[in-house]
Length: 241
Image (tube, rainbow, N blue to C red; front, top):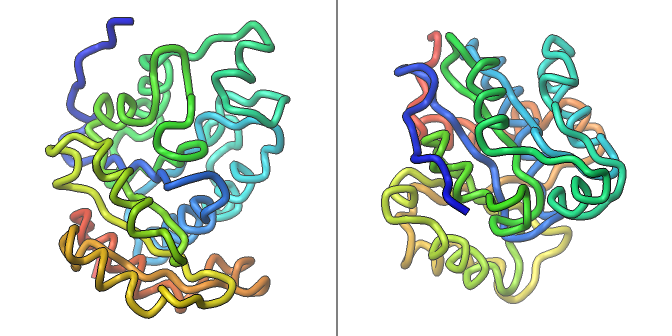
């Protein structure tokens, strides 16, 4: 299938951010919600999306709360499918089709005049999203900066490097990595970040704390300040202060 050529983002001042991961259930929504809350605390004009959701709409609802219920849920999540499987398969089951241009057009229209647009993907980087289109094509079309979320446990270095290898050199040059704290440390935990830093610039690797239930309700608060601030600066954020 011939895909549209990538174009620049909707506004010359807009930074599109695409949150992806090494797999499903690695903490993409936890990070995305915390990052959106951070942007709002620092008065950075922004919007967050979960364009494609299958099964539960819980992830989109989390982003709705992180944006203080000011962005309608159908703007955050314009395409929702009932079956909890890959969006491509879920859409096929319902006889529906989402195109790259429709997704990009929705994001760009809703992001006009803002500084940051944060798009959460579904599953891992190469999880099937749409007919003929996976996350790398969405990233290219939006001229987005990827944030790769992974759990800080044994195997994470290889997993992140596989995602990194699937990105083009130009996209890798603007990507960031989030290492989510695992439920419990293992033998690799103390060395994963440093080892990964031998392959990716250390300043682009950010440790993200594991949040307790009360902290999750507050989107991390001050505990995520260092990680979210470092990522925002790496992505070119301009704070109001």
